[in-house]
Length: 144
Image (cartoon, rainbow, N blue to C red; front, side, top):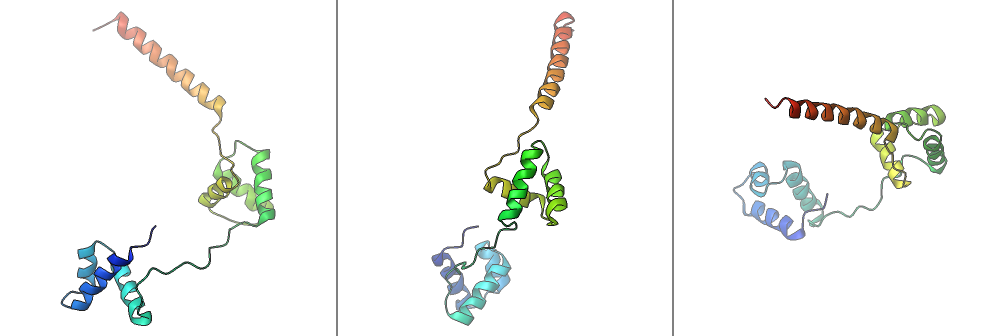
């Protein structure tokens, strides 16, 4: 999520400093969360600054390069596996437990996309198409 602009933060602070309004009312008035107002005012009291904080350190990736190689091998060996199955296989081979959404993110980062089993899809659509054709044919023979 993008940080609130400096002028918006300044409006909130100025309104609060004028007095006569609680933090909760301030949050409602500017359509922000109470937590944001509390953090903004705390930051102002401690530093005198209301600018958005710059994130200095990114969260490290959940898997190292060896584990990413294992993940790639799993996908190559069983390319029709679901994210949940890939997650379980990764846990068996590396001992690392990660969430399904993390598996998805790692695969996207590696530019691997999971494709649905086309044979299953064709089979399903062909059955439904036959049913639709049969129903349409019956309706045209007996219109009412």
